[in-house]
Length: 163
Image (cartoon, rainbow, N blue to C red; front, side, top):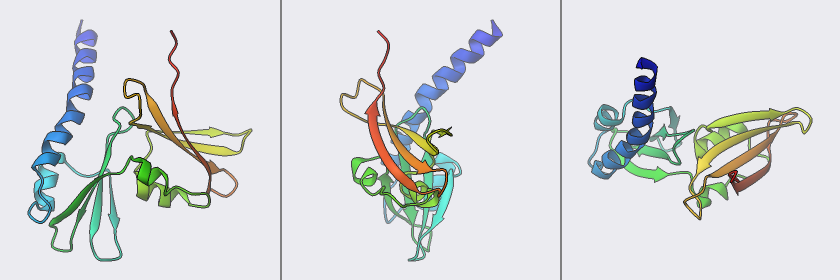
């Protein structure tokens, strides 16, 4: 009984919590909201990236179950500059052969899963993403050579469900 209740609560939390991001993100205003306010509402970011202009970008990643990764960028005074949902066709197009893992993670955030295919000599990073039709489960994959650690291919596909 306890195990069922716990499973139900975990499932409910996984369903509701990603929706909280949208509520909080709508409340944040570039030029006004501070990093302290964001951290209070959203918690610590999954990663932080320093930018050449002195700003800093925080990653809020909802992988592997969610389909969004938001990057929030703050100026040197810790005031919000912008909010970007980075799992987008625009950003997928930035992933080109020869990029390394750090460069890919900086663009798309941490993947939901990684798999190594020894026979193909590839490591594949997997993000669950938005797609059309949106009633299906879509994934974006970045393939890295295990020899060089660099991108050799990308794919976006809908997972086929058994029927």
